[in-house]
Each structure stands twice: as structure tokens, then as C-alpha cells.
Image (tube, rainbow, N blue to C red; front, side, top):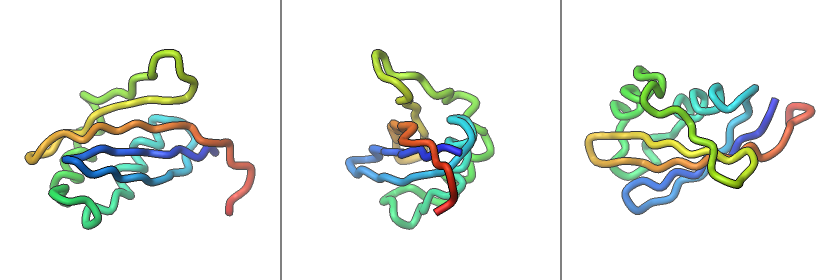
Length: 96
């Protein structure tokens, strides 16, 4: 298992969370599934459901140039676009 750190810029706010996952694709799915929409201004539960239902089809993670284990992708809502960077932070040997 690996620990991933997600940093989302959405409509002027920055939201940071961490997810444990086997790989970056699984980390993205777990990140959106665990996203606390009530903490994000103008990001609704319906926005979250729509992103989950599309399964990031149009938003494959892009490896950032000249960086190791750093990706970016976007999420779209009716109110705007969220720009998400995420980093493989560390390998987790045992559950905390």
C-alpha cells in the first residue's frame, strides 16, 4: 500500500487530503469516494456522484514533467473546474 497526498484547487480554495491505495488509479477512485463535499464551497454531493459515475474516463492522470510520482488531473462541476495534483507520498508498511 502507498500513501497519496491530493491537493485540489477549486474556485479559489485549496483542499488537501490523503488516501492509502495500491496504485494511482485506485487512489483517484478512493479520493473522490472519500471527498467530504460539505467542506468544499460550491462542490455538491451531485458533483461527486457525477465524477464517480464517469470513473475519470476523460481525466486520466498526467505525470508531471521532470517530477517523480506526481500527477495531475481535473474534475468538472456545474460551478467550475477543480485542478488536482497528487503525489505518491510514501510506501506504508503497516496500517496506522
